Amino acid sequence: MIKKQALLWGIFSLFLFSLAHLGIQSSDDAATLATAGALWDRHTLAIPDMMWLDERVDIGHCSDGILYSKYGLGQTVAAAALYGMGDVLFPQSEAFQWAGYEIAASQAGAILAQHTNVLLGAILVGLVVYAGGRRAPPHHPEAAILASMLLTLASPLWHAARGFGTEIGAALGLFIAVLLARRARAPASTTPLWLSAIGLGIAALFRPSALIFSAAWIAWLWDRPRRDWISMAIASGVILLGLAGYNWIRYGDLLEFGYGDDGARFALHLDSLVSGLGGYILAPGRGLLIFAPWTLFIIPQAGQAWRARDLDDIGALSGIACFYGFHALWRDWEGGYAFGPRLLIPILPIIAFLITDALPTWLRRGRHLLSMLSFLPGSLMQMAALAGDPLETYLHIRTGDVSFAQTVWSLRHNIAAQQIKAAATPEHSIWLLLWSILALAWIGYCDLHINLYINQKKAGKSAGENNAGERRTQR
Image 1 (cartoon, rainbow, N blue to C red):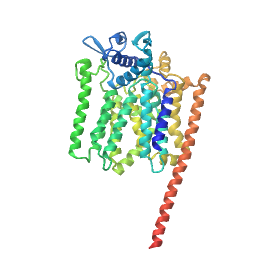
Image 2: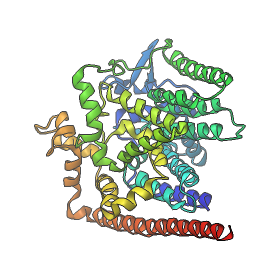
Image 3: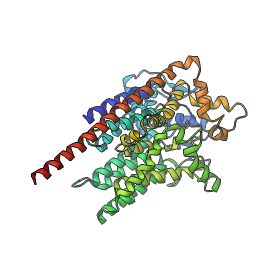
């Protein structure tokens, strides 16, 4: 049953993420697509034809006079596969242009490649439903649907899957790492723990900062034999060598990532530390409290995992905490002109998975109030993003006296408020109507399955009391 639900929800997500598809939005996206096209057409990672763009804005770094994109190999390879499919299906397709310049030889291939995140996102959601269904309370696999609804409809994952950034691929890789680790640690399992490094390696190919999630292995290896520690160390070394080799191929330097503007450095001074740690929760233009309030359920879940000494969950929570702190210390923790906490998207599926089993209990305690507060704000943000491109909203409000910091922190000028304002027009009323339908569907689904959950628990409790009474009678 859960396999069918996972497949259906994945197909639904494929349709959902295709709505108002964004594709290429920035110069970084254009550079990644150009690299994917070059990999398929010319079997090279070099993009010398994009030098005109690099002269205006940093998209990579030159090595021996040849330009290479600064972004990871994961998005490039995935996009190149779809690009090649489009090129094979439509060999006579014209060249693809962006900003008046030709950046790929096949328009059909480029259009298909821009849907990379739609496909990866649908696969990710299907995995979350399947894994969550196996984790959910007995006889209540619908809890996985509740968690996936929050992830898919009420978080920045939806907006990211409509674009061409690297966050979705990194999220898929980290989630695979968590699933493989749990499988390896299961009783009587023959799966080696080092296989979880494959997921981490995939995530690192999309976003190298995903490597910080490897802190989870400390808990996962805690009660394992020495051979597991050794094999994990070898697997980690292979990943690091692979990333360093990718840098060497492009730039002739193992530690050169292509950020010529020194964008990879940290901001460790107190102001950035406070703004990053607090901003990811409270900032009106970036905070999880606005864009995905349901993620805060991870706090009581962490307490439960610690009291139960559940090393599987403790490991995943450790990875989440390190990932959160690492990106909060980043110089540009805001993620540029992002709509919500863009840099935290890779850990959202893991959070949804971890809260699956306790979600019905928490929603039951809060009834409609808690269920609405967990779903409505995040889904409203996504509906507003469907009504209009947040990047265009940024460009509109930044033409005035509004600073970038105000789009993050100001109660009036933050991007969330401005995007809702841009969407609240008669021509965009269809999206507000869709949001109302989604909200009613969520409340109805919650009410139905929480009541079923309560009745099942009562039935189980009554059955247990009856069995106990029968045993006393027999004595």
